Length: 427
Image 1 (cartoon, one colour):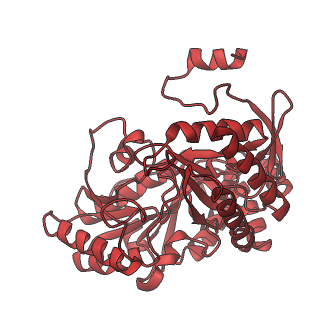
Image 2 (image 1 turned 45 degrees about the horizontal axis):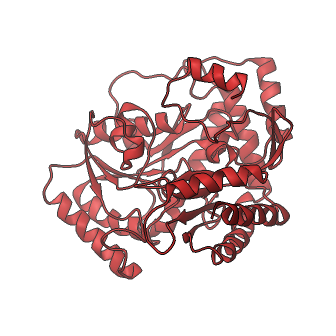
């Protein structure tokens, strides 16, 4: 055990997880690579949990941060803040929500917490509909709407949460149905649920479930849900903390795969927009955003430094068509990984879109999740020079792959080759 690891254990809570039997200290990065304190280089296929969206040490972002820090670091939302207004204008325009207002936070958890506050205040109801297998953050309210027991440390809640079907396509009671039948069954479930409850405030859903193992419903499910929700006056919150900013390749936002009946009422974002800086936020149409009848501020949300980073990062992203790169390189990577998986009877499914890919592992010859195998592959990949993540629903048996969106074809091939070796070594 390293000295730093011992010090970490002495001052950190036991529930603060670390990857690997021998945890690593990352000291610096460049592009899609990072280095540890021992000088080992790794290809980064996880980006600090989908957060280093563009690249490590991107010059445009580091320059913007340094220049803004040299002027003023902090002011709070009690003062006009040019970088915050400029980024809010860009996000409002990109969101697809008409007459949008933007509130910045410091994390996705805080963004979802704010969205819940808005929805419950607007609807005068504390009842929330959420998806099974979901994850929305670690705050008291976010934990209470998380449909994944591994991330729900308490049953206490300020909300009444009811869970609906639809987040996982290939498991559960509707798994054997066609896509069209699956959507109809989930809509019928939602209709039935709303017939037994008081008025709900909102449905919150990740278009692609992140911590849940990169699972998703067929395209169009949330559009079908929207017809039901609108009849009942229930708001739709799209949690885009992991799916936003073009990561899925096909769309800039995950909700756009379900756009037939328009955009969500509320959209939450975080992670990639700051390329590692602490930015989260909420977008909502003005009527919803302005419904609060009490004062509010944010001390650190919308910091001049983080906003400068976000502006530089978003500008680079759009100018270099990183969404298109995620679609092209991600498509190649998924096919390469499916080819790798075909040689392993421990792989149940390779799924995802763009550069948001999950590899679900099971005990060979069964449909039973195999978290031990996922841990072994994680270790073997690290030994081969590749960093990946893991997640999943009932058991953590899904390898999560989400590189920076500037990933090259050569790097995709390198990562796939290391994963192939890791699957063989762990098997």
